[in-house]
Length: 246
Image (cartoon, rainbow, N blue to C red):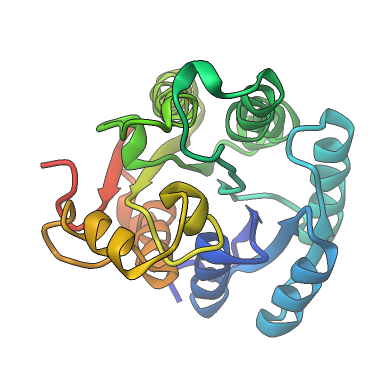
C-alpha cells in the first residue's frame, strides 16, 4: 500500500499505459481520478478500480480546470498528477506532416502539461507536497526517423519536467518523467505505420530485451516514482525501454 491515502489524477487512464498506471495506483491504495477524452473508457476504468471517472480534453484550458475542480471536490487534495494522455502523427517526412497534425500533437503532448500545472500546482504548493509524473518517450532521447514532430514534443516534455522539478523543489513538489519504448497500446500501430509481423520484428530488433513496454511496466515504474520510496528523486526522465536508448 505504497500510495495509501493519496489522491491521484491519471490522464489518458482509459487505455494503454494510463490504464496500467491507474490500476497499479489503485492496488497500492490511492484514490484515482480516471480522466480521459473517451467518457465511456474513463467510466469503465473507474468502475474496474473503484475510482472516479472524469471526461477531459487535456488540450483545452476550461476542460482541464473542470477536471481539477472535480478532482479536488472528490479527493479533497491532489497528491499525484500523471500527465499520460498523448498522441502521435503517422510516420512521414517532416515536411509532409500537415500543420493541423503538428498543432494537434503539440496541443495534447505539450500544452496539456502547462494546463494541468496551471490548474493543480498552486494547490500542491499550498499543501507543501506533491508528485507530478510526465509520460514522455524514448523518442525524446533517441528519435526515430519519420516521427519528427512527435519526437520533438516528447523532447519538450523531458525539458519541461526538469525545469518544473527545479522550480517546484523548494515547495516540496517532485516532478519526474518516464520514457517508455513503443508499447502494446492503441498508439502502437500509429508509431509503426502498419502493424504486421515484419514491422513488429523490425521494431523489436531495436530493443535489447526483445519486447515492447507494457502497461504493467509503466504502472510499476510510475508507482515507484510517485511514492515516498522516491522522495529524493526529482527531475529524472527514467527510461522504461528494455535498453533501447543504450
